[in-house]
Image 1 (spheres, helix red, strand yellow):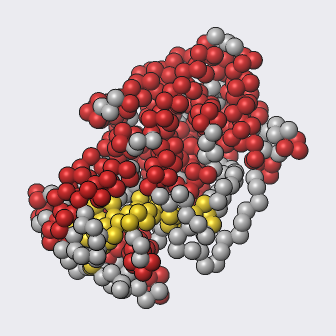
Image 2 (tube, one colour):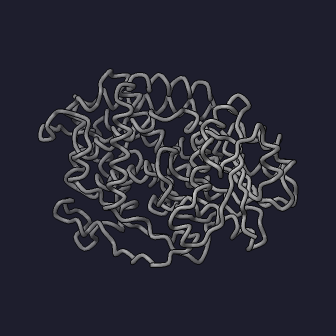
Image 3 (cartoon, rainbow, N blue to C red):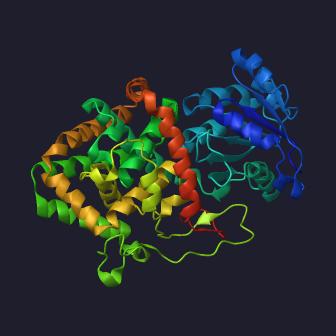
Length: 485
């Protein structure tokens, strides 16, 4: 039967986002004749009065002092707590779960979450968990939500869970917990590592990139905005992803290896070997979006269509839960749009070449790991989509790619910046691979402080950029009929 009481344990920013969307009936939900849902929620005791005041005018959100009142009366309970606290919190309230209830989590790493559920929940509880692939300051409408049917053999129960998740109006994709963690190791951990290392390098050099000629132009505008977007958030969002995902280590180690080996070739000016390696990665990762009839080498401006594949028309009745088919679809970040979103005051015409070592290494790592990043768009986040988009932008334009290769090998004026990036990648990787949560937070906050004056400007501009590109770029081709396993 339909669920009319949903519990949320943990009312941080994401918990409150879920409470707001689940408790309200949008015009679409009214048309679908969806049931009214009351959200029962709680957080730590010291936040009880604060939450009561915040929801005093929200009759469909009821605040409780602890999780016992939540789990005893709700047909679906969602744990929206940090990954590091999941086992403790589920261990406290999980055994009191109502008979036959559905339990979900909102952590971005599913292995420890699933382990906590299996350890502490009654055997009659159904586990249908989820992960919204966006932050709390982004509308969930149209974003990606992963749904994991881990322990639920009744189709009607699964449909009840989907009916609740559907209230966020996201695009739902079903896959296993293991597949989720494998994909997010690439789409999130390595993307975040790259942008965090950029910010650390700029702090070490002591420059604001939007004031430097070498960091002007479409690609660098995106780099700067995504870097500021990440450092505008809280460090625990990224540390949990990086350190508690069992599949992240392999990706981190390969990215470090790619950065190190490419940088070694750069400082030795081994042009032939360096160029051959970059072009081998280009062919492997972007071969399908290059015009094979023209050897995949025309410039971007002359060959936009060569970097696109035919789009599948959107269905007028999309499935409730989708799954991706293997596809390679160009994202094509438009030049004119990218040029709009810079923070700098220097004319773009005065741009100087950049090595784009972070992107060269990213594509080299995908090549080494035999990863097709387009497949991983099924778990896309705005940051990963833009990172893949600017990598595609660079590698699909032979003229720009050759300029970057030449700058990497022979432009001594940027060698110091590349060295700082190389050092920053190794520093972040060491912290992650050692599981140093305190070191991660301290390092994150030091870099954040350096950019403090522009973080909100960068975050706002990145939101506008994400919304603009979402309305102009192709979206991943989600097909129904099977789930990711």
